[in-house]
Image (cartoon, rainbow, N blue to C red; front, side, top):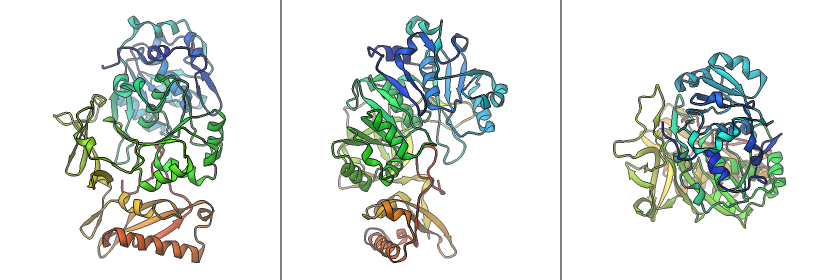
Length: 473
């Protein structure tokens, strides 16, 4: 099993004083300094040494504490995202050969006990005789970190990383410094959120965690009270913020997007809303890790990224697909998946399609998300980018509808800005917006890509990962 030379806790402790640094959930908070002689795992976690541990807690805070404590102790840690049924958790535990299960509510214990040794994790720390072991490199063993893919195209895969492939050189990041207070819309049990947790922990910062049940206004208010300086999420997350009427509660120094295509309209809206913030969008995948960050506030990425030789991460475009070769690529898929994670030459095919325009590559969609209209291909994200340019549009979702003549046609659901979103069917105004959107699509897109119908809706569904829920994905 692969791992980093120092455990996560050793790297955190090396950042200096821990007294003012914290991890904060919706109802509880833990100072990192309090972990020096205590544990969230019932006092003595040494019984988990060498085990495969499934982290199935409901709260993000307890999951984060478990990761800190068990890296370098457990042989394997499996991060189970929330919302999984008992049957799904059982399947994950079986694939991961888990022999210990972490939980944090009484309701979970009975359901999970049969899957392995149940261990309760709590944000209420207790003194631990084993805590000193976390600080001794001689007691550290390599730990596998196992993440689940989103599973949008089928059964999620279990992807094996180490702390080294996940964290890389985060401590040299220019995007954060000691004293930074991070927050993220992502769940830290998914790749995007885990990256932010590690950035906060390894760069001397703190982190305010989100909660999927918390109203967006309350979350923004809570992060503002905590003094959050760095906030991250998907473009869909940020569109929800901008639609909420509470965006001005934040005054961030740094705004970051990843997980979906960051089109020019969302970049421009964020610049107008947060004039003092650095606006960054990044590309990463659970398998290949972080590929690059774009800091010039333009959609897509420069062609020069593909040919650069000054980076450990190499990019290649083949058959319009983005390929990545990186030292931060995960090692393999876990048991039960025969699919090769990378090619023989080390490149990972992301299945994300790009198009070169005027010296810049633009993402146009996923290979598996193409809509076929009478034999001609459409990428939903390309059409959404055109729709989202309309000043009264906040977000849109393009999908297919069966057609007896063409097989499929393109249709679009559109959410309008602010007060307009609350009354989506206001007749004359709605007709005007629809006509203007259609005119813009006809001007910018081929005829087969123009939506056959446009429906004004109040909201769009999002996946637990914070991405638009795409029926054709």
